[in-house]
Image (cartoon, rainbow, N blue to C red; front, top):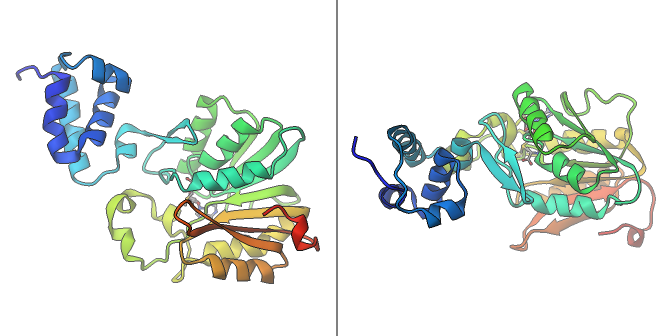
Length: 286
Ligand SMILES: C[S@@+](CC[C@H](N)C(=O)[O-])C[C@H]1O[C@@H](n2cnc3c(N)ncnc32)[C@H](O)[C@@H]1O
């Protein structure tokens, strides 16, 4: 096989998969930084590297997400290992982390629960930013739990306990100051499930048992959360673009006060939450 340089490899691949994806795949095959690709265009690939790159490019052409092909995704400026057993962490979910961090004091211990942790993106990011927090991360999938534990080791996080359980199943008697979740919320018949990256992500992560309106997991979390929160504990969770009103209604019905929804950068309400107890509305940080 004739030898091929970095420049030639990128040139050929970008026609099929675009420049950004081509660079990410080649960086992964060569185990080099973006700067290395830019500064060593004449470097020749070994036959093995050329073959791996060609294989990954073909898989990308067939739609496999880059994150699964390279086994990594950045979230909140941290690198997470991802496998097809976990949802690829989304930039939208960084907003949930922002809102959670606003509610966890950096100076005091507190107990936090992340329901449906997947790669551990939310729990481990909170742990890195709030070392005094005592965090529990739960997932139903043993494969997801294994990925989250690998990420905890790699990110050097020791204040997160990662357990395999069905939502609150393994937490009897525990109470938390804050519960966060990015649960499955896509309705089981949603046509988007047959498009783009979603085709390759675990159904358990996208729809779980979200039901025909996508709200079953959220209903379950909202109705059970009061038994696992301290008296003025807070529940915060991500949901679909058209679910905010229904979520606020469910929160109110379950006894949460100061119920709110928070918009993403596009102005779409994607996070909702509330606080337990009978606090006046203005006492709750929105
Ligand atoms: C939308 S993914 C979120 C993953 C991760 N928190 C993130 O934001 O990238 C939802 C997660 O909930 C988990 N899950 C689904 N049903 C569950 C259940 N009954 N109990 C616990 N976890 C569940 C899935 O395995 C999946 O990892």
